Length: 422
Image (cartoon, rainbow, N blue to C red; front, side):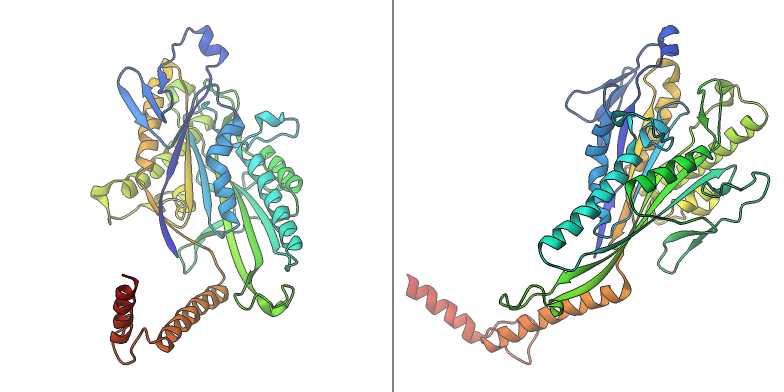
């Protein structure tokens, strides 16, 4: 079953930094109370699905935006969360890709909370199946952690990788249009703690550097991916008197889901960051990737360009996100902005960028094993035919005529019953 859904956009406004307060920067953003709308300056208003002001806590963003996406993974739906914004706007903090064991619980980002929720959901489903005396569902969870640095796809779990050596990671597309990578480590995990250890190890390998705008600026786009495969049972309809533990009453169904957490590097102007040498090259590469992403968003979100070519292949970033933008995924973009007036132009560009993303339509389908899909289709067909056969036996249908035509006898019985009731 195919379902069309729009890309959702949440806006997060970070608090002013101490340096901004010392420099006497004014706040140029105003959130309309009780409405997901932000006003920039005097008259530039933007409406999003969710708006979080300075005082918003990490758990509020997760509960309002992410909880439903994780629950959808158990039903075979892919999901993607993108954090976009200028450098220093709080993307890595919001996502939690810089995870540290010492991070206080209330400051944990989206990824640690999602991982905990995922494994709690797995335990809950196994417990529920045990209470119902049904076969337990089987889950296999694997994780990948990549960074896109200067248009090179690097495996953050490959700790021996030398940055001077060319990466062997490749991006491919299968027959169904799903994007996958080769040459990137897939680590199996059995608990939330295992997954968070992998996240922490990968985060230590990520490329960061200091600029005038951010003491620890991300110099690459990071993609943390969780793959969930589950084998669960579907209870077949039938006689209620049958024993509930009879294995013949169940049918196995295979589902898979992929959850991408994308922490994009911040858009930046070289004049403001003061970057030179390698830092300047990194900034140019980052801006090129974000420009390609903006072109894809424009091509998908602009109704005037509907049906035109979508330039996914212009950048490895857009190629990796091909099934997240306009493909098979429930996608959420978190736009992170600064409230200070000195960042007015960067904030305006981010808001425009995020506003265009809201127009993108994704076609979401359940990722079901081919055999399971065929069995489900045949089961529905059998139910339909059984219903039709029952209607023929009751005289509601006539053989040899168009499907759905009701017999004259049935019509007459209805009329006589109505008269009799009167």
